[in-house]
Image (cartoon, rainbow, N blue to C red; front, side):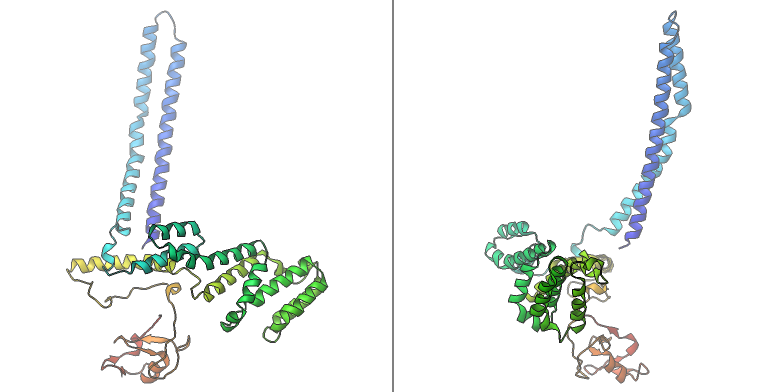
Length: 386
């Protein structure tokens, strides 16, 4: 969608509107001045023949107004404004097609699952009242408590972190320490490190040292550099803000900690950090314009696309909507990596990049797909995100 084109058209409309408004105000001021001048002349006219004097003043006023020609002067700027508005309206109609129904297929939707996704979205966005009302309206209140409870707990913890109170977060981390360790998370260390820094700034050196021995020592073998940095802070107890480690007191650290905890909390729930509904809608908004253009072309050619297994043209998405999962190359039997990503061949089958390089002799010759008789040109293979 050419949003820049629409913005430029809008800016032109705004500019023309300001010019038209300024010209209108200028004309009104001149008319007001002429009328006030005529009134002054009438009030100071000779009383011997007032009717004659009034007529003379009014005739002069009429002549002056005809000379100013306010309508003619305003007509030009108003016409330019109308032209800009007309073009802007046509651009909106062109880029914001109101009929998007032709860009989706009529498929059966599991209403219960869809309701669950929407309700989950409201709860994870902390819109608890809206979520409760939604599940009540769609007639599924029994599922509300199950979805709502974990996010209530999460936002209570996040609110406490916002107030620099780590107790709820530390209690949650303690109860889930095994699961967090299995997932390779370091959120427990981050929470204890923040609590240690808080004690250093507001408590005594002995309190900080006791806390470090109790809660930080288990991480010494795997996070020695971080622990050493924290231990050096003991020399600056009560005056950490004037130490070489003053960055540890930055308010942004609390924001980052809250973000990390939210990510780990969602991970333990088996959910992504970002709302799936938000991601889906954002991706849909991005691909909708090219889809609509493609559908218009298909309609013009009187061709049906509803029965196609895949679109005949690629629809690109930004990298934020490209999700990687595990892929094992059927030729090398190796798992795909960033250096050896899965590649989509022109026949529709997928191999890892290194396998394609070997079979094509570093792009020097065509090769046959291991699964079908197609001849493959390695140059035309594209990296696959899934």
